[in-house]
Image (cartoon, rainbow, N blue to C red; front, side, top):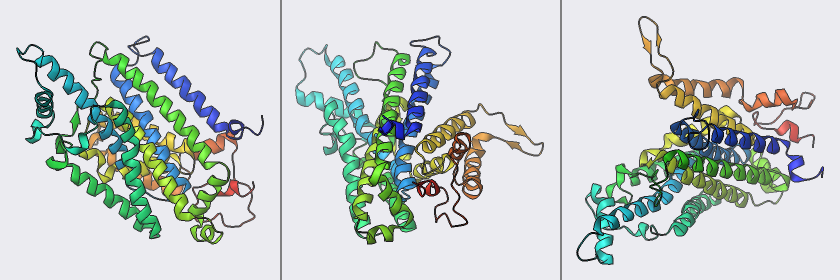
Length: 410
């Protein structure tokens, strides 16, 4: 029993317990199943925050554990949202069109029905024809498969080309950012097949669930987001434990030495890159139905930079650190940008937090990087007594924010 996976990872049990209590508490205080103390809009905010915590874990695995600073992982998050959004928009529009044509004296043909649905969806960009990428949009099962397949293939092709060329460091970060920018600019075009700048909207309206209030649907998505986050946390804990985890941490700290020992560094990096892309896409597939809309601006490079900031503030190299960073920054951002934070009148100038929030976030990132490389997650070490062993003055290595000092004594 002492050697079981969960006993070796006590933080995993603590996290799962806290997540279960949180989900139960929100449910009991919701408008749908409880006292109504938590509004439906805030339930959606909490559900979206859990999805952001999921993609933060993916970022921590690829950056904090493997040393690949990807500035494009939020693009996979957005791709997952687009994949599920296509089915949501198609199925919802199909119901509306069928109901509107039900009273026609002559039943519409399949071609007329398809044209009508296409006009409703793509009329905003001056078209009525379904692009080839919408060929599976009428099937929920196939679109769920596409949520995993499309970002996985993109990550596989990009990662294979980049890693086989042994592109590392800042050059790889620039490449991932360029990939994100290229995808974002392409989606802004009206002929991209995804409605250009208009994006996909009305995603909060589940097909066939018109009689179910949003208060109930929001709780369902909260449950789904919590379950996905729990499974992602367990899967990531399993990946970083054992020999595989030791190898990817070795790649992070000294890639050349790991390659010299005979390990396929490119293979390990490619596996982690593809895995985290799929994890991010699953988070996006749960996030955007709660947000209600997705457009190309969501995939802009700045979003992936924010993702790196969350992980750094929470404490990279710690799974719970990534969750803490995403949750804290997301909720604080909602408070500041939602007009809830009071403005500060300095007499000669009024500080409006809606305008200054990004400056505050950037300053926090700089301060954490300089003075607290372990992030907020480092506070957990202080409370749990998880301190570094004495290395008798020996250097801790190039990555001061990692757990190398603790790993050295095992």
